[in-house]
Figure 1: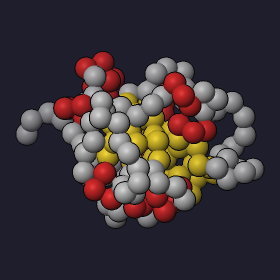
Figure 2: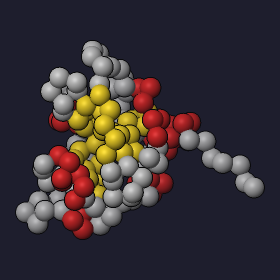
Figure 3: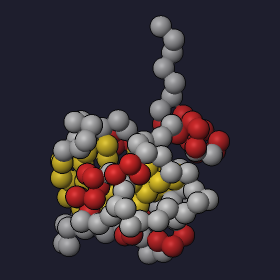
Figure 4: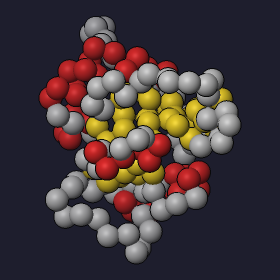
Amino acid sequence: MTTEPLFVHCCHCRWCQRETGSAFVLNALIESDRVLLLQGAPVTIDTPSNSGRGQKIVRCPDCHVALWSHYAGAGDKLKFVRVGTLDDPDRLPPDIHIFTASKQPWVQLPPDKPAMPEYYDSKLHWPAASLERRRAIFPPRPAA
């Protein structure tokens, strides 16, 4: 990633649990043009999602580890980078925990981070600078 991400969320939904084989997934949301591919040609796999609109999981062609996802709502403009694949994942702890209604009961959430039972409203939780960056790639639609 060539810049800091827009936001980092830890998703506890059952879909993420199933896809990762773990209790949650840690995603760093970032503009696609701010991710530099150093080598190889990742493979994109279309998978179902809870929304019914699907997601594209981009994987290493050699080891098949998930590198990032593209969700239908953002298309290819945003990458949801798997923090665990980065050289220094410790630098990107979650800004928020989402879909906590389905989190594993033994997972203890930190009291200093927001925790949402479902998804969240980015306008309420993202820093102003991240919202501005988002507006640059998803400009507001003109009023009809």
